[in-house]
Amino acid sequence: MYRFRPALAVTAALALVTAAAAPAIASTSTAHGTASSGLRLLHVEVGGHAISAGQISAEASNAATPHVAELVITPAALDGTTYGQQKVTPASSPVTVPSGAQTATIPGGLASLTGPTFAVTAKDGTTVLTSAVLKALGSLNVGPLPVSLDATAATLTNTAQVTSSQSSAEKSVVLGNLALPSIADLLDALNVDPLSLVLSLTKANLDKLNALVDGGALTALNDAVDTASAAVGVNAPTTWMATDAAKTQADSAASAADSSAAAANAAFTSGLTTLAGILNPVPLPDGLSTALTPTQYEALSSTVKGDLDTVGTANGIDFATLAQSALDADAAATAAHDLATALSALEDALFALATQVIDAVGADTDPLAAIGSVNVTTKAVASANSPVPVATAKVGSVSVLGVLTPPAALTSTLNNVLAQLSGVLNSVAGISFTAPSIAVGVGQTSRSVSGTTHLASASITGVTITLPKLTLPTSFLNLAVRNAKSMSAKAAALAKVASPKAAIPTTVITSGGTIEVATLSESASYGQGVTGSAGSPGSGSNPGLAGTGASYTLPVVAALLVMAGLAITRRRRTATASIEA
Image 1 (cartoon, rainbow, N blue to C red):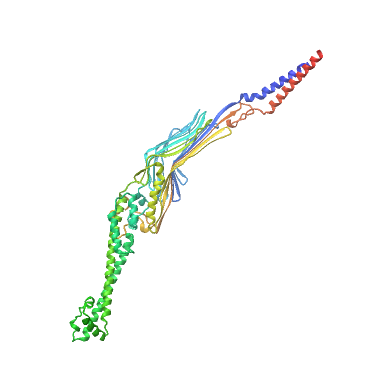
Image 2 (cartoon, helix red, strand yellow):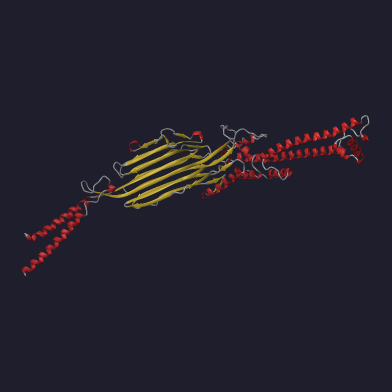
C-alpha cells in the first residue's frame, strides 16, 4: 500500500492541472468593433447666428448586445434648434429623410437654407451597417456673399459598418460648380452703391477696378483726365466727387467775384457821374463821358488821364484807384470763371472714365472664383492590419475672374485679386473692407493600437469660405442716386442696383462670418476579445473584456505536487533496490 502513495499523488496533481486548464480550453475568441461617421454638408455663421444643413451622425457596433445600427439625420438647424431631425434604426429602415422640405433662416435675412434629402438604411446581422445617400442637395442663400452650388451635380455616399474582420466608416461627397459672386454681385450684396463708389475713385483706382473686370483700354479717357487736371493746376482734385465739390465752390466764388467786379466798375462809373455833376455845365476834361470804363481809362494818353485825375483829385475822387480796383475785380472774376470751367472739364472727363468703368463692372459676370467640382473623401478602417486612413479634398477646374487657374494656385491667385479689390475700396475715405477668402481643406488622420484594439480616424472640412467685412458710410449705400448728373442708366447695368434697401443707420457694418462646405469625420475601432464558456470564472457580458480562465495559483500548486510526487517515487525505487541488493 505504501508504495502506491506517490502514484496517487501524481495522479491527483495531474487531475488538478487538468482542472486548472479546463476553463482555457473551453474559452472562445470573439471579434468586436464600432464605426462612427459624421457629416455636416453646410454650415454658416454670420451675424452672431449659426445655421447648418445636412447633418448625419451614424454608428454601427457589435461591441455589445444588442448591436447598434443607428443614424440621426438633421436636415437643418438654427442656433441649436433642429428642423426635421429623425433617428433611423433597422426597425424604421429604409426611409427618406426628411419627408418634406426643412428650412432655417437667420433673423434679418442674413442667410437661409433648405436642408438636403437623404435615402437612409440601417441593418443588423452578421454585418452591422448604416448608410445614407443624397437624393437632393437643397439650397443656400447668404446675403453678404452670394454663393452658388450646383445641386444637380451633388452626390453623397456614407457608410459605417462592422464585420467579423474589420470596422469601417467612409464617406464621399461631390459638389459641382461651387462659385463666389462676381464683383458686381458682391458690391450689391454688401449694399454698396456702385455709382457712388466709382465717382469716389481716383483715376488710378478706376484703372485698377477696370483691370480686375478686364474692361478694355481706357487710354483716351485717361488722357482726357490728365489734360483736364493739368488745366486746373497742381492742386487739381483727383476724384469726381472731389471735383464736383470743388466745382461747386468755384461756381460760388465766380459768382461772388462777378458781384465784386460789378461793384468796382459801378464805383468807377459813379465817380465819373459825380464829377460830371460837380462840373456841370462844364463838361468833363478832354470831352470824356460818364460811359468811360476802367479799361478805357487805362488806355488814355498820359495827358488826358492826367487832366481827369487832376480834376477828380480836386473834387475828392481818385480815378486811378477806382479804375485799378475795378480791373483787379474783373481779373479775379475771370480767374474764378476759368477755374470753374477747368473743373467742369475735369468733372466731365472723370465722369466719362467712371461711366466706362461702371459699365465694365456691370457687364462682367465672371465669378471671383469658380470651382468645377469639389470632391471630399474620408475613410477610416480598423482591422488586424489597418490601412492608412484617408481624408482628402480635391477640386476640379478652377477659374478666378474667368481665367483658368491651376487648382494648387487657387488661394494665391484669388488672394491677389481680392487684395487689389480691397485696395480700391479702402482708398475711399470712410470705407473699411476686408475681402472674402476661400480655402480647400487639409485632412487629419490617425491610426493606433491600444492593447488588442485597433483604432483609426479621419476628418476634414472640404472648403471654408470667409465672408467679407465692411464698414460703409450711408453716403455709399445702394439707395437713390444722389448726384447732380444722372447716371442711373449706367448704374442699372448692375443687375440689382435699384433694389430697395431698408432704412439703415449712419454707418453700416458687415461683421463677416464663415461658410463651411462638407465637414466629414470617421472613426473606427476593432478588437479580438476572448470569452469564457458558460459558468466558467472568466465569462462575462462584455466579450472584449472577458477573463481567460481560473487563477494561475492552482496550476502552479498542481505542478509542484507532480514534481514532488515524481521525486518521492524515484527515492523509493532507489531505496528498494538497495535493500534487495
